[in-house]
Length: 279
Image: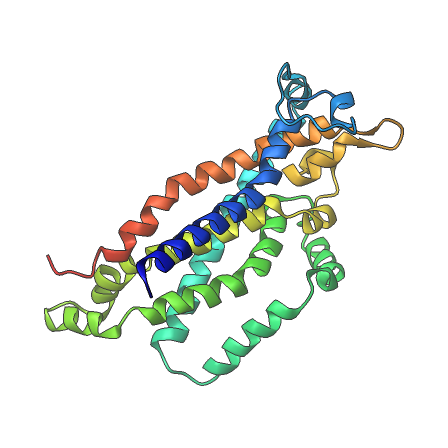
């Protein structure tokens, strides 16, 4: 391909990439922008693109009561517990189906795919009855239990791909050097699985953090709301919807996810090479 054609193709690809980025980031910008506007400005047919003269009134409304702080604590406890338990079980299961051959292995993998096809709404009644029988309604453990059940199949499937992608010859070389099978796995293979653990952990964190329908069924008490449920308090039959409060609350809800990703994103790169070279 001639050099001018390659340059033109590269410029076109860059322009398309920038346009895709702008389309993806615009809803986020609009959410943050609207959080600084008054209700009449948000409802104005003429959009306010930049919140010049905006205020923090919507954020003050969020912190007027302790509902936001209580919902934040509830969401953090449920999300962290869900991610920890899901990664623990998914790690063990993915290693089992990737490194060992046993009867029912393929059936287990097929069952994981079938579970992913079941609509979450179709399990509400059975999940509610189960938690009610165990006296786990309106509890962190109860909500975390159904979240783990929801996240676990995809987490196992994703981690299985990462475990399978690490050559078993690396462990064999470590065992030749004197390591046991367990030592070879944790010294050589486990560090290479860091990208997979981080990726699935981020997925589980986001899914548990933003989940609404399961929390609506399980957490029926007002003082046990998670953050997505707490956002419904800005909608009132008589007063209408306080979009400024919703936008301010949504902006605050997005911050922990961004912080979590910034903390773990460095490990996604370091895990690609650590453990592959003998020191």
